[in-house]
Structure formats: C-alpha cells, structure tokens
Length: 152
Image (cartoon, rainbow, N blue to C red; front, side, top):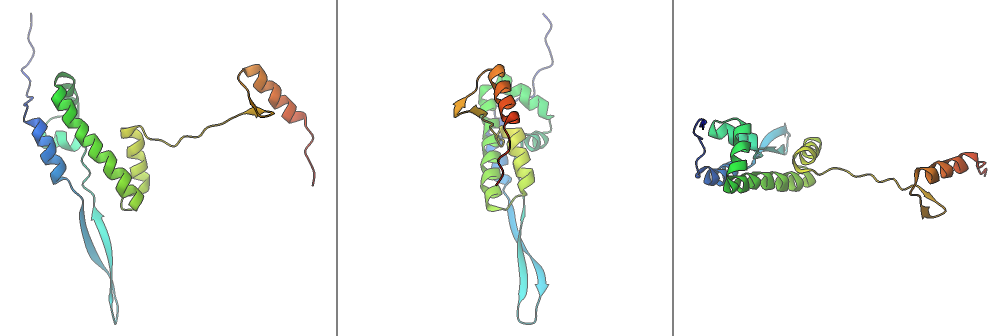
C-alpha cells in the first residue's frame, strides 16, 4: 500500500481560527472632509477586515483547497471553519443593514457564500384556483388573450 505525503494539519489550527477572527475586526476612523470658518466637517469611515476562509488560508500559508480537504478529515477543523462563515454572515447582515458596508458587495457575498438570495414567486391562477397542469395554464392564457380589454 502506497502512502501519501504526511499532512501539515495541526489541531492548534482550530484555536488559530478564533485568533484570526479576533484580529480581523473593522477599524473605524474619521477623516477631515471640509474646513469651515466656524467648524470643520468630518466623515466617519470604516476599513473593513472581514474574516474569510481565503484570508485564514493565507495566514496559515496554505491554499484554500488544502483547508477544505482538512475539514473533510477533521471534524473539529470543519467546525472551526464554520465559525469564520458565521462571523462573516453576521457582520455582512448587521453592517450591511446599517449601511456601513457596500450593499452590492454584501449582497453578493451573502448570496454566493451563504446561500441567501432574493426570492420572487409567480402564482398563475384561474378564477382564484391554482393551476397545476401545463394544459390548464395554456388554457388560462388563451382565455386571458381572447378577453377584450376593459375600457374606462
């Protein structure tokens, strides 16, 4: 039986996740926007330090795929990586709602990384009854097409 290269995985990487999350906090500051005769204007800005699996992989010095592979073999590491996901999702929602994060980027990350998306439902009905079969839907559309438009 042929053995592969020994793994570089270490159990302490699970603790490193917590340290990574703590160190990746947003940094708030102000910059001098305008100078006035009686007062100056300042604007509050945020330097976003959103924790990501990619960022954690880079911190450890491994490709993201290596971390994903380790998470398949080590359930405790899988759980640790889920902490990054949970922190990211929570911050995207809270800071996105507060307007502190770019809404387009927050929406994109929530959709691609966390399965959240806008949902649009279409309900085609006929006389208040739901249509279930294709034939019923086609018939309802034909009836609607043939109805004269009401003029006011």
